[in-house]
Image (tube, rainbow, N blue to C red; front, side, top):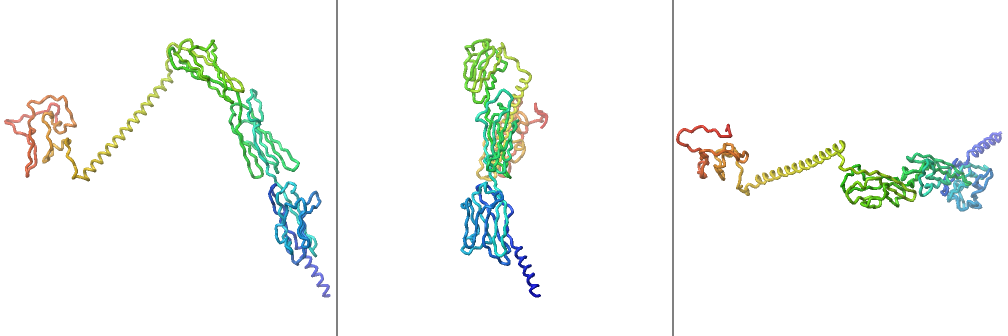
Length: 479
């Protein structure tokens, strides 16, 4: 009876322990060609304890298991070709004389595209039997990206036909790249994918546009997107085209005896101009003309003989471009148009405004400097009164003459005064043409007063005999 109860219980415990033991691995891993990756494998929940007889790593190829690496407590560790130089066990305890095989993670070095597969980690135990798990290894290959012009130089055609001007290639990538173009050109792209035998993909994209001089030196950028990374590469278009020519120098106002006139041949070309040639449609070039490559110099004053049609031919390795101009000669200069007159007046107004602005600036600067000098002089007088020097020509105002009790260093000559205002302030009011006064004024002293100790020098008028008639100054009606 007792055995009937114990045996089922022991069987249940053993079954629970066995089913709880497992091999733990990642479900998937990825890596790039040429790099390394770790494939983890651990035996967990070894309770009740079991004996690990062997651990075997295998690669699943077309449903067939191929041994990669083996760890055996008695026989040691072995790695099979072609993995011998590229696979190792990460845990050093695996290599010990008494190894610990609970962690048998392996490290893959120098990955190849052929390493992409499903890998199995199998534990052989006693008495639990075999336990295994698997991981899917995915390999990526970074592409080689290259952009180039279709030819070093592209010749512009006369027809509006699109042609390939640049090519962008993302070679041997896995997964394939996505190629786009960044440009302001009015063109289109043509993209194709080529699958290689090793599982990689080469993506090629051509950019087509009509070659013309307008797109010369225009940038063209290829954008290659691989996974979450972007790679860009740019080129500058080199379009060759024949010369486009214009003639400058004739302003429509070549008149008789005008001097220093010339015609200039301007040409836009790629490659550059190699030859300029001048022709005169009315015959041979005038004898007064000197040819200097792209310039036609008229060495003498204008005459009627130089009138006619002039042609300039400019050539490069692509072709030749030509331009012509009709030169007319008038007897007199042509009158200025209303627009020219307005522009001339505006020019004079602007020039005058500039001159006035400069003059005003100079005047303000000088005035500020005078104020600064005056301020510095006053400051020096107040700070050092002991060293003050007496001025030989001191300015006298009206207040100075009307204030009694002041001593004046010098007295003016009576002949200088023709009016009362002039006597008060001779420097502020000049009367150069005043008539003489009869009799002469004699109320100013002819000799300086002497200063007494108890009196101040005061000017007094002399008292003439008889009544004093009222006198009105000729030019002043007020005092």
